[in-house]
Image (cartoon, rainbow, N blue to C red; front, side, top):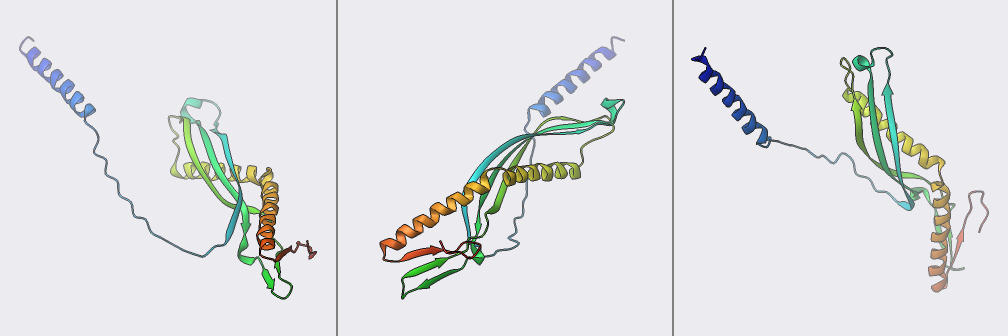
Length: 193
């Protein structure tokens, strides 16, 4: 028994030394990325309002009894930036040099032009037999983005964008009047303003 004691001590020291060496050594991380430009197009968009959103999204897949075996739960903080404005590709502008008048419009309805969001995952709990799959992470990401889109659509951003468009038209009028021109805005129902 005493003959194997030095061998056991040496083995234990070797395991401890190996653990300390490999645990303290930084991992060799290799990253590789390929970025491809898939499509490029000309745009004419006017962003008039941006909104910052933050929400907590709670995902809970409850299976019933023995929750520690099957249930999955995730708490996600979603932060989003929504840009609202106008797509000007179909905006009509005409200039009449004899009357020195610029006709604009009608302005399109304001819309969400871009939505950027980030997710911070908190409190991820998975069951013994169930794990979150990549498809579920993607589904949660899409659902969180859709929630931000709905909040922006139903909130005050679209009305604020329309009010801001009026300010921009007034600024255009001011610049045109300084040059001896006038700006006439055509409304959506065909009435001149």
